Length: 185
Image (tube, rainbow, N blue to C red; front, side, top):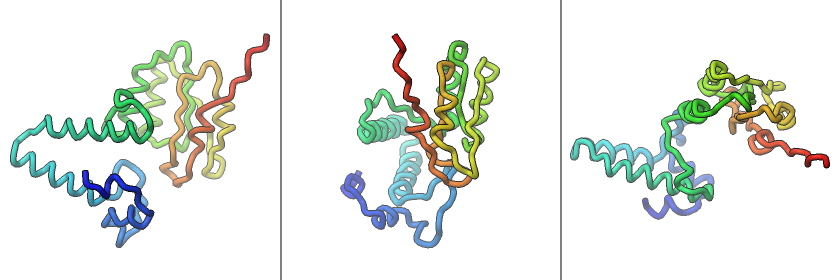
């Protein structure tokens, strides 16, 4: 990793790392982001090692481990808490398919959820889950609408950071937690 990857960037410096943004405005918000110069170089290096060594598995798993460590450091987590999966939809399935939905069957989501993630939640109905939706009000959802659906039966709350449909930022922290009243004694 070179020094410029470790240092803070101004918005202009950060944007300059994405050559395609010089000539276009990138609006895609699905699985493919704008290509950075760092990623382009890494892809070329990956291709070179495949051609030269065939299958240098250890080298590239070490790179994945390094990325996990950097991300863990960034969010103040343990590297053991970080999993690398091919997509958010695959990650949602990994979470949902390991849950026992009997005692806490409610999944709270929104109709602004990305469709392939929403399908994962809906597929859990066959395992006993019940999906409740926070509906958007003119393309926006509010934290209190999530909180109104969170109760003792809730086993999972899914709040996307941004809506794939209109780019609106959703209330992740406020919407995924609910202040519980202390027990009355």
